Image 1 (tube, rainbow, N blue to C red):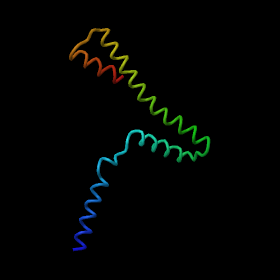
Image 2 (image 1 turned 60 degrees about the horizontal axis):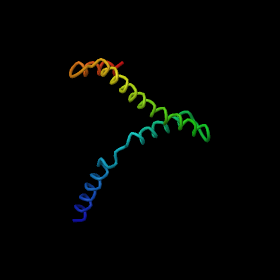
Image 3 (image 1 turned 180 degrees about the vertical axis):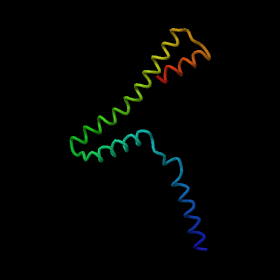
Image 4 (image 1 turned 135 degrees about the horizontal axis):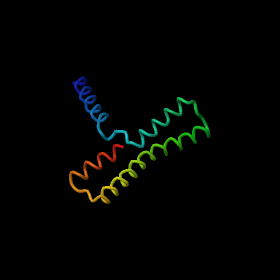
Amino acid sequence: MKKLLAAATLVIASQFALSPAFAVTPQQQRMADCNAEAKAKNLAGDERKAFMKQCLSAKKDGRAAQQEKMKTCNAEATKKALKGDARKAFMKECLSN
């Protein structure tokens, strides 16, 4: 009976460990990536702090650049009065460049 109870407890505990509640957020992933890069470069103290600040903001800038590109492409499509499939095709081409 004790073995059965222990096995059941282990199964239940493993289900909680694999639940999506423990998923890594994009911010956590960015932090982990920047930390790994700083460690690989053997950075410490103020040098590490400056690197981390730059690394974390650079990752955000990539997202901001994509949003800016979306705004620009959207404005061009509106200026050209594109609608429907023509607009979709234009946006796809514009965003891929």
